[in-house]
Amino acid sequence: MATPSSPLARALAQPECLLLPEQVLLPDGTHSHWAVVVAGGRFKGVGPVAELTREFAALTPLPLPGRLLMPGLIDAHTHLTQSLGKALAFGEPSEIFRRIWVPMETTLRPEAARTSARLAALEALRGGFTTVVDAGTRSEAGLDGVTNATRDAGIRCVLGMICNDAANTDGEAGVRRILDAAASFLSAFEHDPLVHPSLAISIPEAASDRMLHDVARLTQESGRRFQTHVNEHLVAVERSLVARGLRPLEVLHAAGALNDSALLAHATLLTARELGLLRDSGAAVAYNPVASQWKGNAVLDAGLLHMLGVPFGLGTDGTRADGLRLMDAAEATQRIAHGLANGDSSCGAGWLWLDHATHLGARAAGLAQITGRIEAGLAADFLLLDLDVPEFVPSWDLSWELVRFANRDQIEAVFVQGALRLWKGWPLDWDARALMREVATVARRDVARAPIQRVHPPSDAHRAQHGQPAR
Ligand SMILES: [Zn+2]
Image (cartoon, rainbow, N blue to C red):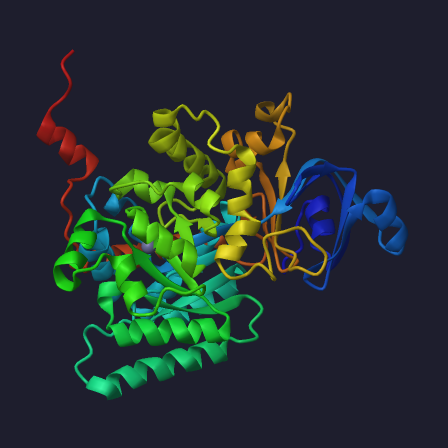
């Protein structure tokens, strides 16, 4: 690693640190006069300053005035090999995966998939995410690309391998090949420190009942996550009803694939019966508020899910890799979709979104025993946030302020597995500017030749079409 020029960054880059931040965010709220010891990639001690300075007397305490030490945020649902698309999807109606993402991802060459995933990992770290849950790439070489990019950037990743078999024309032999590859994938990453294997089926209609059942059984037996997208768009719900006589979440239930290993993205269009099936199954959900804002047909009722005890995390779905803005979006979207209509002006409060972005998000991702909390024994995945900014003065309620005021620029340092991955938004051990130059070249080449179909014209063309407003 290059030696950081800032003395503070140099001190933070040491393999063992005794940190004395102004505040520490724990699952029960913020605490002052607490210390944190990081060693061997883990939190070795978390407790009152007096206790820890005594217990770890050999370490030099590093005071961090004006900083909050908080868990790294969890992106419970994303697509790392879609980062070359970005604003191509803006203004588009639902099911952009059919017209934009699948054509683009399947066109990516192996190095482009890796470049895309590395860019997405960098953006995620800059946005305060130390863990991302990737729902599976449609790029043939994407799985290796995402694995390598994850390691290059040093982010934690729950990595989904897609097991769709709807296009299988090889009968039982084809099914066996997919299931054998899935089992090998799970065992290959069994002890990996940063890559946590997971199996995925893009949407229930992309697989046979047999495949849905066997994939969910494999993940349950191995303690991993089975990822799929359900009940996001009206058109998908109706297609499922016409083809199967069941809604997507009901298809999972009927196939015996709705179990406590499932992590369901969106789940925004649920009937009362489906809510009951979901609650009884123990399955988790990724609430993706920005996806609802940009191209959704509905907003998940997160307050209801919380009340029912359905585990859920917050996901970007590849929209905008900013964890602080994601919490803000989660809260604002709930207020507008549900709170305004029933006079609920708090929709929980700041703590609700902080919890679901950190330790409850880790639980939804299947990583509750690994990350999501500042706790001795867990991986040292954390952020240092600068609280000494005008927006946080005076501070009356830090939890609320983090949800409604916090900005990515306040993230001074990002640590994953105890390693300082970003300092003031940039990596210390690799050239992010060179990556950005490479992205521009690769995107021009690979995105341009993808058979993408856009419905909505770019902004300037749209303005030209619809005329200037009257003066
Ligand atoms: Zn998605």
